[in-house]
Image 1 (tube, rainbow, N blue to C red):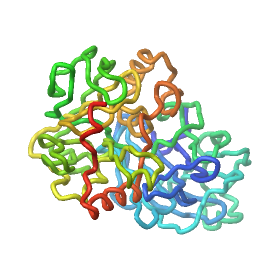
Image 2 (cartoon, rainbow, N blue to C red):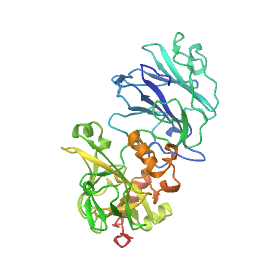
Image 3 (cartoon, rainbow, N blue to C red):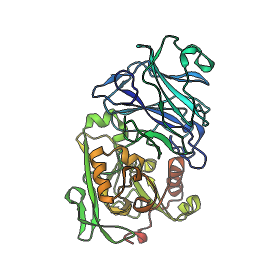
Image 4 (cartoon, rainbow, N blue to C red):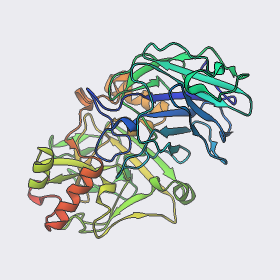
Length: 407
């Protein structure tokens, strides 16, 4: 059983070294920096837990973050603390109940060579610890080093947990939230849905159909491989109240014609992280590829593109094919489900088991970028994606060349 505070709060994930041999840009500003590192806690219980006053400690700097008053973590939700959000970046978003905090530091905190992560509960005078990269377990009650001021009477819950050895750009994480086994893999900070909203029209060999009409096995038109069958569909509905409480769930509304050359052919709604294709010489100059995929939220600077806070329920649909493909939503080339960290974080465990069976892969294989899960195009992220859109707008260029559509 995982070491826990308050009958359910566990250390769930640690991103030790965001940049190096591999990179991970937690705040999405376009650059992986040392302060993109983060600690994620998880509520493994079936009840809401008030985590106000919980403290994060490090031997080098002492108490470096305290959860503010009124902070309640819902069952199955995550609370992420990032060392420092950089200029142009933002905290990663997640499900309606996930929380994210900026510690506001300008320099890295975690020791890449090995360190302890200590979470202290002053109300019960208890703490839990995780170690990595072979570091010995500290005794903070002795007050040595950066632990000056730590309670001398505090009790460790459990015996400390060894998360193992990290790899640059990958995080140390539990195999499943709250589990007793650990792995090193693609970081999974609080993440959002990557999907089509209800009412989306997708191109099929029989013409456009609404996403609600489609079923597993139906053929859908792709840019690269002709008509391909849908292998899996999943839907999740959010209420207006849930979306108002977590604006990252709001759909991006792309009004008819907003992307140029008559696209989309009708109003289109996508989740904020759902990627659309941008093509042309600007993309080639910036990314070395004629076609790149950018998140829908990168389009928000364009006229006719905005976040939509609904007055009725919104249902998001994941559409998975045998491989990551470019589909056509109201004429706009956009992605099928890509099994990256953000999508995986928004899919319930039973559904992930179903996906593994369909793809004949293990849970650990999901989130990798090779084989059937390889991305269909280069991903443009953060500030560079926004800059790509701005340069198209400045030069009055359409984001997509209609001649490239449908193959």
